[in-house]
Image (cartoon, rainbow, N blue to C red):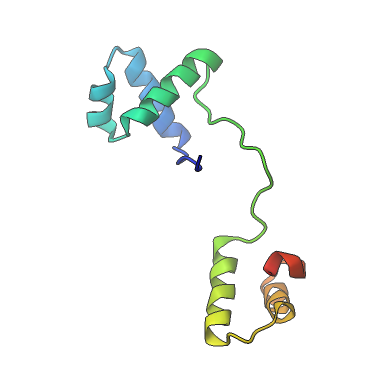
Length: 104
């Protein structure tokens, strides 16, 4: 099962407030343009936990930022014979310290 989209805390609060005021799922959808399946997930979590915060996600976070990843891809597209050591040096120049296995 893939990762679902995280909605902002403000949007979650709006969904819960509209639900508390008696709005139906369809009315919340038309007002906020949030998928009904997401509304059906947010509201029961609020009822069960008493808060509309997203749940904790297990696993290790990303080491490289999307910007670092784009930089590496761009360097490899320019020169396909670039080695992993070269890419690690490029990242160190940017300010990100990683191991060779991370770049591979």
